[in-house]
Image (cartoon, rainbow, N blue to C red):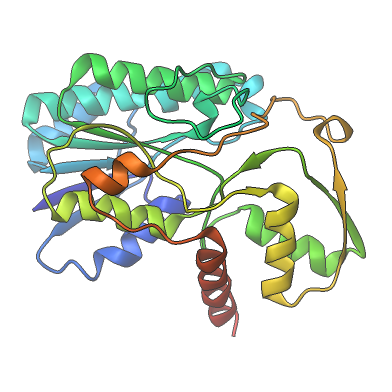
Length: 287
């Protein structure tokens, strides 16, 4: 089995790299922009032609949500044109494409879990670029998996967990948003789900939702981070209106995961259990 992973330096790509060591029979090729610019169609098609991949896991993305409001072209290039190029090359060379998308394709106006058949309606540039990527993939290829995830964090890169740990040690009190509700997702769990699709050779193609189990506000998430990290800091719940950002965020983006549990046969950990695991790994690396 020959597997390409794009965005290898990101949170998900880095977790996939760690897990790849347990799949000795598979050959993994990890690339980031230096090795393969996914926005360059000719380069992508040549790369696929030369390497004969069975799977392409696209974890490359433009994820600076607020910056995307000004940088529409770059967000669209990486989140829409890039995936379209990968889909085209995958289609030509018989590769199965596994692409990672986001809960931000939804507007957040529901108050029950979003399913895969709910109509997307992004409210920011990032969400719109990710949705366009999904639509372009579907136009080009049949053998694809699109996995929408939410509130991703990991032991690698910059993310909410590490930012909170740093701020909690620097400050006496913090205001954290309480009226945006979603589910934190440990990138290692998402990586495991993706590799389950690969190792079971599933042909239940389509769009899926994957996050950890449970529901949280950013305030709940921050409180748990401080509790599990033994950091003492005064936490104050604040509303979205008290902390304006360039990009609007969905106020509710909890996703229904029953489709992936049934079709791919995976069990999903609760976000609090995964957070404890992630914090333990971060701690072990700092010693």
